[in-house]
Amino acid sequence: MAAQYRAGWSGFMELSEFTNTRGEYMMNNLSKVLQGRRKTKGLTLLQVSISSGVSLPYLARIERGERFPSARILRKLANPLDFSEVELFKLAGFLSRDDSDERADRIKQEMKKGLTQAIAALALLSAKIDSL
Image (cartoon, rainbow, N blue to C red):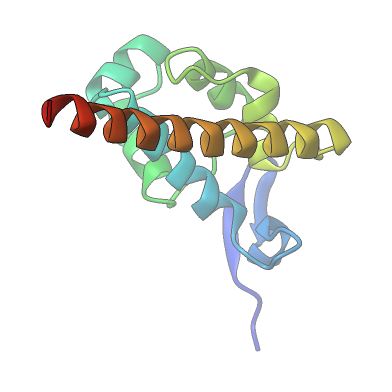
């Protein structure tokens, strides 16, 4: 079977070099994360393009998973999308995750769970107040 190649930050690389430990393509995960953050912030591709200085067509290709951004491009995208450069570099696989990342993930999950419980309690309280 012939190897598949994709343009990367240091020329053309085998697609296997873009996989993480779960065998998922990091570039597709990164493109989904970037697109999700942009949409969550209510920004258009044009707005991100203007604020980052990354061309609109190139940004669209990154989001579609057709291009893998270089470290230079990630630096440009970090601020408009409210990422730290280190966070984007880790998502892109330029830096490895460490124990502190795992702890931060657990804390975020616990905070989300607590927030969900608080919202449910407020909804119940609101229903009781409405019934008075």
